[in-house]
Length: 139
Image (cartoon, rainbow, N blue to C red):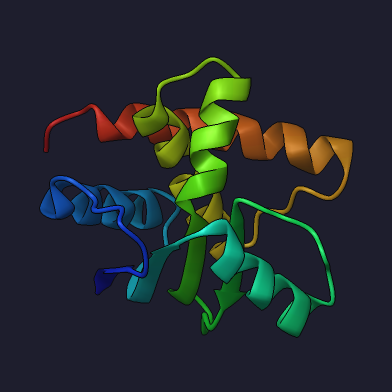
């Protein structure tokens, strides 16, 4: 089950479409949907999590906690909508597209894709683009 939680003013439009899209991402990589929770929050909220759980005193757009079991994908995906908005401006892209990139990034992490090395990051970007295109395809 894909669920969305809001700890800030932000509200996701068309929750059913986003839920269906995340499920299709997971299925497209031959995984099964378990329990995936997206938590949309502020920079301040995500910074607290980053410091407490990862010992990083920096702002970030996403933190993913993986509870997957084999091919069943489960986890908590925390997203700072403040950071997504700033990144959209920085990279001169639409907020909605940047949000899709970050949302796909989180679920790709749950499926084992990394981004620490240059090679991993390159594959992650390719996969993000592929999955964003899936959002715009009606099922």
